[in-house]
Length: 326
Ligand code: 13P
Ligand code: SF4
Image (cartoon, rainbow, N blue to C red; front, top):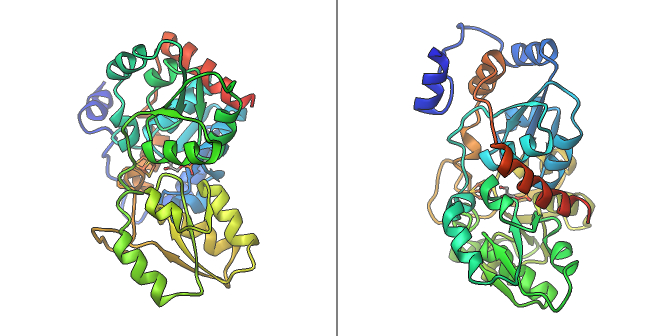
């Protein structure tokens, strides 16, 4: 009860850990003892990625969550991802090290407002990007990720109108690729729209031999000048396979850790942010809320736990399965 109150108040367990403790070792020990698995998105810290059992993009993480047989899934990512894991694997205990790890896209579409929005187009098929709440998922016909948004939209009969939410930039990109006229929700990712076009242009002049590659959540002006557009996993594969030796990467800087692992001899430059932080690149403040201490405490106390109400779970699962079956 004491712990419940703490989680309710601050969103995570702020218990201090014994001085000199080897956190990495203790996390791995606890994980084994409790039959737990650590899933991590490419945008969390290098340290967490290095001890995770599985690191992936949103689609791969959804697939991995569904197939896990362990009792506990510790999800090092953001709230909508942990919620998705719980929906796809309801018997597992799903933990998120910090409940405050949200997402500007998911926050842009509160369930009740979204319901009113879609009611204006009763005949439209609703496609929602996985970066949304379970309530919005339950109001949708299909979920998609940045890996399969084009395929999902292409699978819908041509005579159907389509609502695409909540990322307007991804929606405009899908619109361009598929030629479909989409009804767009006005949401955006604070990380990808924080990439500075002006600074990027200067960087391209300094590195004329670099290929610009970008995530589809970026602004259209950036996507128009990119030589490759894809999800975080697709960008990672591209860096590994492309004959080019230098890349400017327009997405969250966490992906650079894996890029350097798979292509240690290539030069990988993060796209510059409008407002600079310590690395002058664009970082997701929500993803970075996952820390080793919070991860340790989550495993130790088995909190904070993600719960989804059964009615929402049912509708959201249907929309997720409609995506996974494509
Ligand atoms: P992907 O994992 O699909 O590349 O999406 C990136 C992202 O912004 C996740 O929040
Ligand atoms: Fe949300 Fe953007 Fe952060 Fe992804 S990077 S979790 S879309 S705010």
